[in-house]
Length: 304
Image (tube, rainbow, N blue to C red; front, top):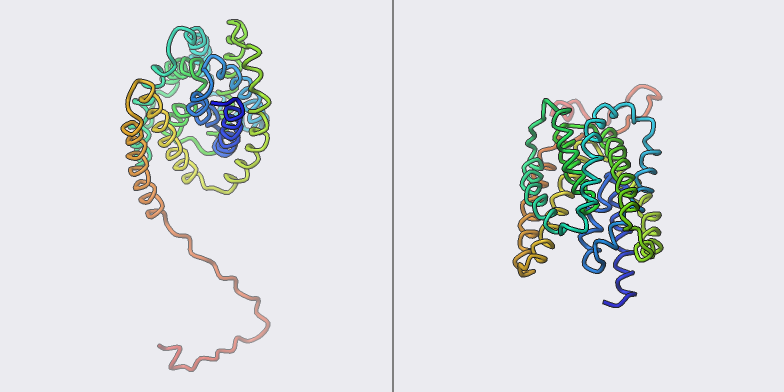
C-alpha cells in the first residue's frame, strides 16, 4: 500500500475514533487499532497511539475534574491492579503476538456484551475485590494492544454506573494506564522516530473529532447512553474478532459472517429496547387566559 494511502487511512480512522471517544468517553484505540494494524506494525503504531491517548485522557480528566471525588474510591482498586498489568503488557509486547491476546479477550467479551445489551446484569457485590484482578487483566491487554475500553465499559455498565460517573471513571483509569504505558514504552526504547512520524497525521483527527463527539452525546439519556455503549462495544469486538480470525488464517468471508450475525442480533435487541421505552407525551402549550373562555361547540357536541 502506498505511503499516501496509509497516511490517509490513519487520518480518517483517527477522526472517526476521536468522534466516538468524545461521545462515549472511550473507543479511540478500540476503533483505530484494528483498522490501523492493517497498514502499520503494532510496535510502530502502539507508541504513537499511547502518546495521543495521554493527551486525550488528560483532556477528559480536566473536563470532568469536578466529578473525580465521586468515583475515586471505585477507581483506586482498579488502579492497584492496572499499573503492574500495564508494565507486564509492555514487556510482553515484543514476545507475545497482540492478536493472540485480543482473540482471547474478544471471545470472552462478545457474548457478555450481547447478554448485557439484552438488559441482563449481574452486579458484583464485592466490587473492590473484583476490581484488582480485573485491573491487572485490563492493564496487560492495554500494554499489549492499547485497548481497554470495552472490558472497562462492560464492567461499569454491569455495576450500573451513572453516565457522568462512568465517563469520569474511565477518564481517571485511562489516564493512569496511558501514562504508565508511555513510561514503559520509553524505558523499553519503543518510542522511535518512526512512531512519532505518525503523529502529524493522527492528531488533527483528534482535535476535530472530539468536539463532534461532545456535541452528539450532549442530550442523550442515561439508559440510552448505556445501550449505545453496549451496541458500540458489540460491533467493535465483533469486528476486532473478525480481523483476528483472518490473521489466524480464517477466510475473510467466513470471519466477517460473525460480524453480520452480531449486527443482526444487536439490531433486534436495539429494536426491543427502543420499542419498550415509555413514550413521553407531547405537551401542548396553553395560552394565557385573557377573558372568559368562549366555546364554539354546542352542548350536544360537548356531550359527544
